[in-house]
Length: 421
Image 1 (cartoon, one colour):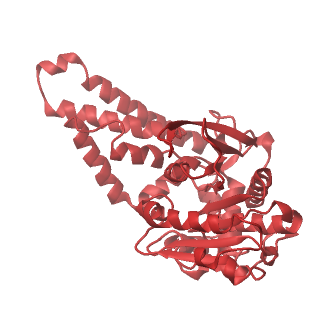
Image 2 (cartoon, rainbow, N blue to C red):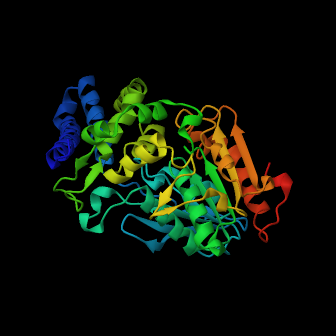
Image 3 (cartoon, rainbow, N blue to C red):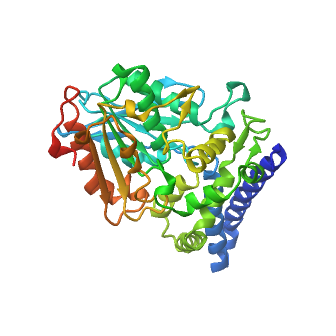
């Protein structure tokens, strides 16, 4: 499948479905049809609206949609997004609250590169903004990056995170969510060896596969059983002529989306059927619950082939992080080099993506870190999404993380034990 033709065929199918939806919506909206009221026309229009919107979202990068943040002074402060570091495959951005005194808590959110944009963490950002200066890694869609920009694999990802940490300085508190957890841990360890003065104050790792074999899920079973040759032949394509990254080998976002939906096909089918019925009744809204969720869920990005394949091969199959055998730029990273960065693990009891134990394995790797600087939390009844953006995050986990940050904001080597357990 490593051909531009297959990539363009998928884009053609998406574009055709978007056009069909727009055509159905426009045709059913002709005033002449109103002379003969027919529920079939209302359903056709509703189907067109939902179909057009859904297929259009697949190639649109979502907006952050964060306009202002309330403050304790009773004022709403306008949020301005500023690029701090610009790189070919991703930027470091800052959510600056205009007119507000700078918050003492400086937080770097390391967003996943796993099919969706960094805006997947929108709710996480919104929840932290009142209390923190929030920075986030904003990864770019591989289809928009020219081949001349070179490769981007898990080693490059790790080096990017290192550069972002160095830019923000040693008073930073890092929160990594899901896929980047093992690579953020590696970036911190590498930084501890090369530039110890630039290490962050604390590291909060949320639901990531440090050791995929610690507790099996469908994700880990897939990574263990499929061969690399099968993956490359079935998942990798070259970007077509429509985008700047023409010719680049990628794991296409549309192919990823098909996999996401197939895992819960019945649930998604029911959701879209119900939305069409609501639209036909005039009960659907532009920002209702369905559209708010699917505008984000359907917006997918291509990953570079080397990043996807190296993740499966080195993180899931070879377990290089779990075995403390990870090499970056020719240098073997030693997790024991982390000696004074407080580390907290957060897992969800019902997480079926990165099951309990996979992230907790990080603490066993930190042989040079005192026990009083290690902490963990297992959130009862929480799934994968809930531990960083859902009710569990808002009500239980976020306060614990902020307490952990505060406990480790003083001079290095000092920590309040009660705040990290």
